[in-house]
Length: 329
Image (cartoon, rainbow, N blue to C red):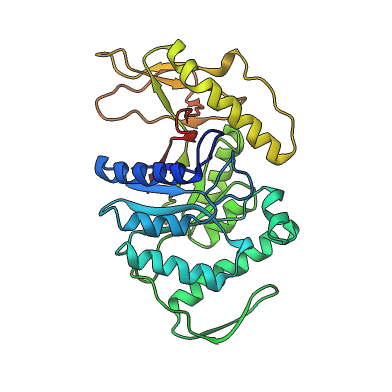
């Protein structure tokens, strides 16, 4: 099992974009020093409070110059919004500058705002995603190639530079919709999954489909995202998280055009994770969203009637989320 962290760099009022980019660079440097396996950066657009991380590959290329060990991943690059030639080139450069530490996470995204801003019909997202993925993999594994798709085409094209990793950087697919789990399985690709989008029963169904679609004997590779906030008491956890949590809900719901609701009394639950200390993990519950918990070394796993919990972690001081990615092979 490997552990990483995720950020999509929201920029709350009172903060500047310059400061927030300094924050994320410092966070990646610290993650490198602390021994995190991977940093994952999301690509989002057109909503300052929700995210100012419009080009994660550019940030990862900069982070490559300040780190030596941590792997640098996108979670995810929105392939339907871009020309695959450009993504193949930029990702290769990031891989070169990091000495082969890039991980390319790919997805379609769900925000209509993104597609409207890029003037791309969202109903074309699946076709564009599949074509772009095939295009990029061909560009990385062929000296010269041709491609004839509905949306993207190439004839006798040689894309340079080429990545350091061979045959190419690891590619991971965001599996959130029912058709993506079997798609990733058929392509033999690792996936991202999160109970922040699919409730436990749907997530387990999707993961079962993914495993069943993989070739016989091939183990699955799933990266699970679940935010965690650590506090010494229930009151402290609520004080730390509630402002940022509510702002996050308002920002996210505003982007999707849905109404917000006040967090209920179920906002926080706490797990004792060590019998030798008062340290507790604050679990901010949201509806039926859930994720399995893995206790760290030296801590005892929480025992309860259910094996699923859900959690959110928001740093109200920095206006960002701290989210571990746990990737098991």
